[in-house]
Image 1 (cartoon, rainbow, N blue to C red):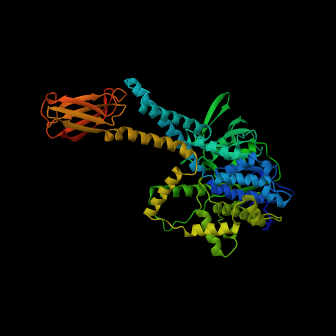
Image 2: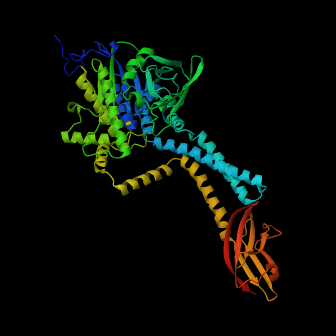
Image 3: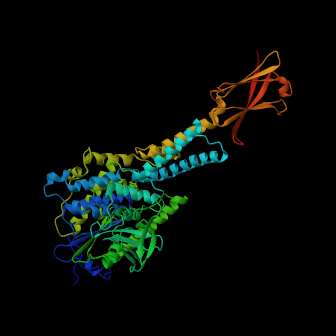
Length: 608
């Protein structure tokens, strides 16, 4: 007779009529179970949700040195931190020491990374690299062109200023490279930020032996797994294609590869030895191939990495967004239509993966449960629905998360883990209380205050009109350019100085020149020019009524022998014709044989 599992335990047999498709080692047996956790993708929203799940597992002593943790995309950020700081992820024996425990330090380190506006920091450093390189090339080529024309003279202020700006741009570039993490590629800038905020130079050889990070190889479309000092590339049937010892590979590089969302970040390049020659793979977000990470954990790591041991309980922490029913949407827009198609495809793949491993030994923790019985949030059904709607409204991005968003997402993950573990395991489960969560996060307000603030903000949010949406984009650009990030000044200050200098050098010079003409009774015309520039040279022409040049003269550069204003006297017969009461004066800025700028003015001839 078939035995049915009660609500307090996991079934030890698959449902009737279905053959088991999971590895035999996943089926739980009596005694203490070894736990394997797969953290799914979903940006920083997933990272914070998984943090709550991990805290509940740690409090219930389900995570220890023998546990296996695999992360994908946003889940790889938490899995990478756990891999490098696994000795700090344990609940203190004295509850009063929780706020100053190593666990609190690791939690606050992760939260600091989530709240640092990582995405914009990466884009600012990438933009800084290109802006400073272009500025240096522009200034350097300008000086080189002046040298080729024979007009380079560093004793003259305009060229001295250009040389100083060039030196400043080079210094700013070196500073941004050395201390700011500026990089030519977005993926490299992302790697540098992860290493600065979380990993401090840790390599795959330094981390926990049972921690694994997954990515997708754009080179051949295969899954990529990094862990235990190795990197491995698999074929579609999960047989090994490449397996290489890479203990010196930065952990931040593996995390960046796993979370390099394709539309935003360039692929991460990893080079390793294979069959006595160098092999290069370009890696992108692990969620492209396996967003849940469950297939990678069962098939890949179980075959090639030494973790196989019974008993084993597999926990899948699924932070995937719900597939909303779009009854009111027409999906006529190009972006919205393609995003919807991608969502449908991702949900189909995720459901197929879970059906593959469904059965004994698998505990599926859903951030957004499909079964109403698993909607555990306390309160009325209406309040529970509103809570899930607000949580689903949080973006899956790597930008700055508010304190209220951090608190509610971590709390939601902890409550979700407590609910699922209480219902599915035949054991008592302890929850993470509000006071304990407050000790770990150490934010200035209480958890309940942040909860009210979070739900109030998201329920007041309405879909903006065109003007409101445009204004939000403008504010986003201003926030990006004027963010509280010192790298903004590194590239924006040299750029502003160069732009202002060029405007002043090319336009203000002719506007400031003062030309005066006078005529005496003897038939002589006096010319006076004030505010003439040092460089480039200035030529003055008198234009006749028919547009012809009656007279022209190159002005010598001001010096001790020729102080400004410059004066000259000419006889009317030098002009060739008698000018009237007003005459057109043409001023030309000349560099070598090239006319940079010219302007015509009508100047009256005064009587002396």
